[in-house]
Length: 346
Image (cartoon, helix red, strand yellow):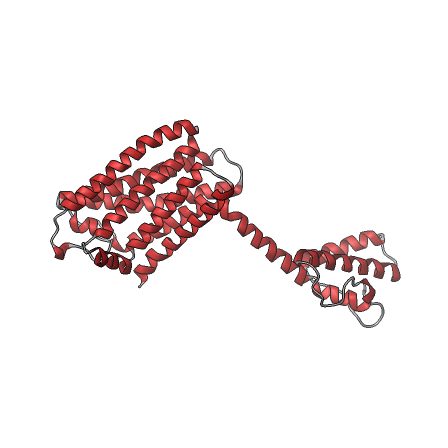
């Protein structure tokens, strides 16, 4: 159950990132974002296929054992190409990036073709085949075709992760925006986390070829891949989804300010009902307008009370009102007392 969750949650997050990229591309066409969209689709598909429940279902439907493993490898190669394309469009002029991308696409196509051939030639006994995507490298590392198949997959992932981390690290020195810097740092950390998994798998393959000790860290695989892919997704799409976070934060701040002013507003309106521009409890306009209206009514009431109830003070009424207003804004509490004397007591 936990292993399924470890694969399905990152898959869902990757698909959400793909939706955000697609929505962004509708109004802002950009080849780099298109490449990121493809990378999220490929990575999300690989995570979905890697879940143990889905892994077995696909194999049973196709009728070939470990067909899902081949599909995951192809998704990994496509993901590596897409990440490389994004890095190219970020760091080079578009014409140069497209020229280099054509070469990389040819290399990726060759890697996919070689993976299919190696998968067909792989000859492992049924008992040695794992029931999930995990452990395939360790189980077949002694077989050269399986070692080559998984070596192509993890090597392409390693190259793409290193390129992404280096590119993000390089851009980090040239940006000032805290948001962009945070996104680049997240991308670098996610790439490094995922890179640990790929390097471990390459060590497992190399050790298996020379019949060395098993260096696989099976329990850490879903953690490293899931956490790494999630952090990368957050970093790569931060400029897209951050505006939604800011919108939610603004709505929350407006709601809190409106609610914090309610006790003061009720006391002022209770003392001076005529300052209420609308009937008490009415909902006119949106929350921003209601907050603006509430502030206007409070200011009107405070000014009126300041005129009606003059006492000796070291400062002017305006200075006193400014001081009181800052206190209310800072502490978000009121000091209106209805009882003996006037409603507002200094």
